[in-house]
Image (cartoon, rainbow, N blue to C red; front, top):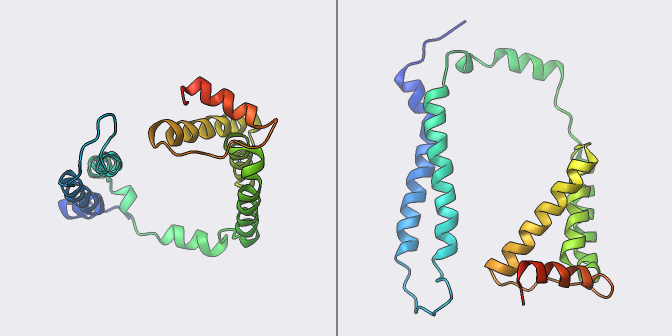
Amino acid sequence: MTTAVTPLIRLRATLPYAVVLAVGVYLYYAADSFEFEETSGRIGPGAWPKIILILMIATALWGVVSSAFRVTANTLEPAEVEQDEALIQPPEIHPWLVWLAIGMTLIYLFLLPTFGFFITTSVYIFALMYLGQYRKPVRAAGLSVAIALAFMFLFMRAVYVALPLGIAPFNDVSYALMAAMGVH
């Protein structure tokens, strides 16, 4: 059964993105009117919300455009086939994985002061990827290190948040990365 794509169907597909776009524009306008006393060399309190809102607006705009042009009759067929497949083969639910991830998070928080942010975060992200069934260890290790470095750079260089460095000898890694990033 194939249905024709009508303007109403296209509108229904783009409406959620349009709402997010409108809210993002409104909130950006609100963040633009923050009153603050400027300090040289420092960004104001409206900078971070604006950066996040620009990303939100760009994502919503992408959603509006892509949903308006990618809606086809095949994507709008009734979900009878999907419902039948879901009844025949229900999705796997593993609540023990959630509990394991919570336990790993608690261990991460416990080990953070000892091993430092970079080492602990790299291992934690790798473990979460493995727990999430991602089975490419070299790629997962590279991604874990890259994500930990990106967060470290963001927090220490852009937001000016002090992160746990760890105890000796693990703090040597933190100090070396800080020197490489130009954090003093």
